[in-house]
Length: 234
Ligand code: MN
Image (tube, rainbow, N blue to C red; front, side, top):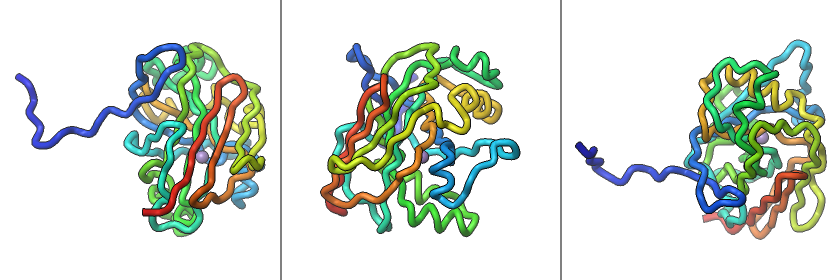
């Protein structure tokens, strides 16, 4: 018997895949916090890997926006920030995955922008409240074309971001505090990872504000590019 819903269910969120017209359906969006030392320090929260574990926050799949979009400056913020990141796409189920096996659940990669209402995030952080208002808001997860690279672990790759052509972020994936294998191993202790799960792997230093009219471009060497334009607030 066909289920009849009282209104149209939310659409499945999806991304384009390089080399095919098929789309990649999204399950969850996980984000790693403070995963480059220089960024952790610029946020005033240095990381000591010998005594700390990675931590995570989530964005709803409905926050997904495709690269190339124009988004309105979001509400209830005066400090809207970019964070350029490598996004990992999970392609196989994985629970308690050992680091040495982590490559077996990798489908591919994309470029991502973890757009952030920094003022709201920091208020929440400093008051011990959830980060959702700062991180999990409409159109905050910008992702580019997915590049199938099954079984490939990216260990070195330049990552860059410009605003209106001016360099703002420049780093390398080899500076991750918890690398790709370690992220998969740790996150899969807490969750049964599923195909279509995205992991935003963290941002390097140089995060900063954008305003209406700004144009962001970013890249990860060997993966691709991403862009976003900011328009006036609603
Ligand atoms: Mn981030």
